[in-house]
Image (cartoon, one colour):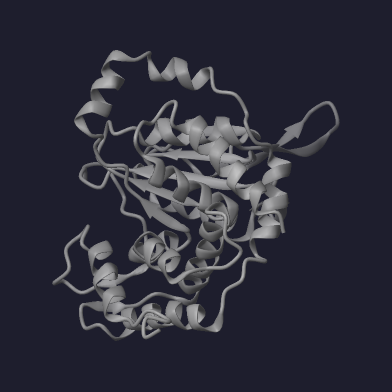
Length: 314
């Protein structure tokens, strides 16, 4: 395995995205890890922090077809999946694909759509296909849904159900820039124009090849046990009503492999697991009333601290 391919891939994507979003290297890396694992990303933050711009920049950098969907309360499932229409010339019904048929989908303000429309994404996210009038249509790979939502505003929004939240590989937050970085943005060019000028730096073919390779990154039994210890700790804690599912454990396992690969290692370290656990696991928890919204990541960090790290006795 040539690990230089992973590190070079990471360098190109991060440098491309940082032309638009300054000082958020760690967030860009985690979006990249999700993409390499074939997962989907939920970017949750207050308005105006650059969520949409980051995902648009990422889509331009990694190439492939891209569609942006603005979610609204009147959006219908067929507006996403497509419809069968009657072609008068041929006398037959034909399928007209919706905007879901692209490599990268930006679902902007996903929690503004009704639960019925939100649920139309579930099959695409889990099975990489959509079903319309009994016929199934596969999505083109690599396929990734990048969703944004505003956690503060409640008027006119429909919270994502647990079943759909669990389908997201990671939940991330950008946060505010440092003062100097924000000042440079104020003095810089218009970000919309900069995004339009971004070039494709990696190809979908490269991505698919690396997706195959990333599963070969070594995970020792000790590190696998470390992952399971963290997962099981969420199932025993009294502050958590429903702990992390097996899907969550698999996501943390594969995310750790991808993190090790883009960091130039052919094996996973416990630090990879500990670093990613809050972003992969926190949104999968169903917490008791004592845990407020936004405190779930801190809870995962706290539980991870109670788990013995492999080889620490050596």
